[in-house]
Image 1 (tube, rainbow, N blue to C red):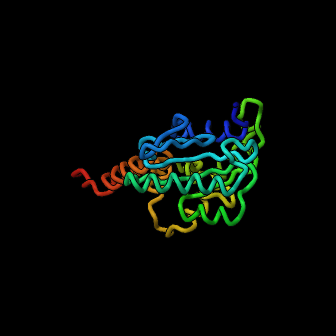
Image 2 (image 1 turned 90 degrees about the vertical axis):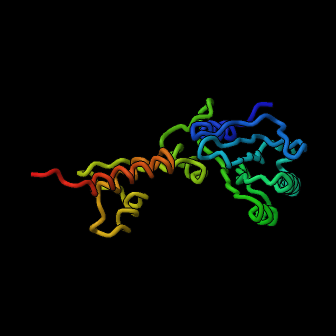
Length: 209
């Protein structure tokens, strides 16, 4: 059965963020589990396990909130048995689950909801606004990206970059801020390297005159 456009779009975006689709079913503690889609992170996201629930098609009982909760509870128990350190995120695509079941799931994992998205027939956002809306819904799973403003350009009102700059003390090194923000989309290791380079430049002794 073909996945819905919404599921396809979410999977595409997660794959771009260094996630890979797991085979279906996949096994934990010799117990098979089957979800609409399951993805595992790579590199710095290696401990992230993402499960997609499609409440619009109802595959694997996805329209039944109780069945969804029971399957994820069983997976959580299997992960505990193996001593796994996976951080589980459930993305509910379509209608939200019943409130009681959603609350029960939040005790076990992170729960995100993507109710809809404006997509082309190729499961791509129709425009920049649609792309931002989709990414905002799953932002916690994506690399941190901030616009690289030049010195002469002011950040847009309400942007994360503007809020960050306003929260920093006025005497904060502007080059350090710029370097760290530029590296943030590449992960924590890149941020650490950027900090190290800037500190080395600042602390380097001046050449003799």
